[in-house]
Length: 79
Image (tube, rainbow, N blue to C red; front, side, top):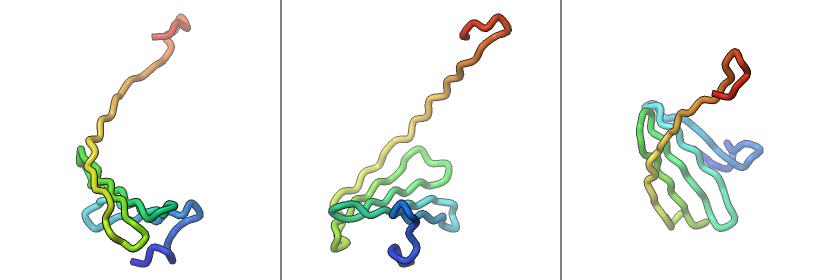
């Protein structure tokens, strides 16, 4: 896949693999950033590359989702 020919107006290229992993790649001032989000995984991988393609940084991030809802009951008090 060719990054340059498939990027969007935000200078980002996103695709989904046959295993439903989402991969987003974008260019930044000193190289490229890649975020890999496997389906149903708690960790995302963040890769940062130099312009020459050499890997600069690889990190795995734990995805923590907090679910909290706010609403109003029939008396219009915040619950």
